[in-house]
Length: 123
Length: 108
Image (cartoon, rainbow over all chains, first blue to last red):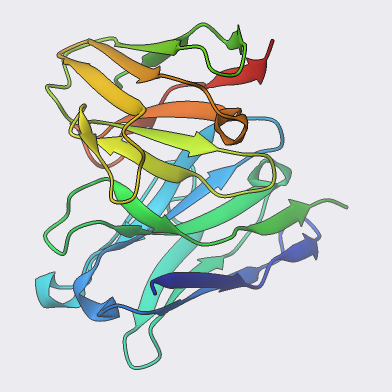
C-alpha cells in the first residue's frame, strides 16, 4: 500500500526556520518526482515546489513566492522528501502537503498525498 | 499565468441527483487537466486526469470531459461521501500549473 506520512510543522516566529518531512512507503520512492503544495486557511491549493526523480537528476524547482527561502531535498535511502523552510513569513501559514507524481517521467498529476502538516507563522 | 475559473462556487444537490461542475481556462491547456476532491480535514484525492480518465479506484459515477479551455466534472447519483470541495488543476504549463478556486458540493 502506497503511503506518504508527513511530520514536522508547528508554530514558529517570523524569520525562523522549519523542516517538514514526507516519508514514503509501498513504492519505489527514488523513481518518482515528489511535490509540495500548501493551502492557506480557507483557501485553495498552491504549488510550493518539487524535486525530480533521482534517475532524472533529482533537480528541485520552486514557486516564485518561496524561491530563495525554501529548499527541497530527498533521501532515497530513507524514502523521505524534505521541505526546508527558512526566513518564514506570516503569509507562509498554511497546511502543507507532499504528493507523489503519478509517473516517473513526470505525469504532472498526483495520485497519492500525505495527510498534511500545519505550519503557523506568528509572533 | 493560466487562470482557472470554476463555477459555480457552491452547488446544492440532493442525494441521488446529478451534479455538473465547470472549469474554464484562460487559455488552452489541451487535455492536461485533473480534478481533485477534498473533504474537510483531508488531503486532496485525484479523481480524473487527462481531462477524462478516471484515476485508479474512482467510481464510474465520476466522469470528466472537455478539452482546450472548457471542462466539466459530472457526478451522477450523488452519494453522501461525494459532498466535498472539487478542484480542477491544469498541468499544461507545469510547473507551476494552476488550480481553480474550487466548487463546494453541498447537500440540498
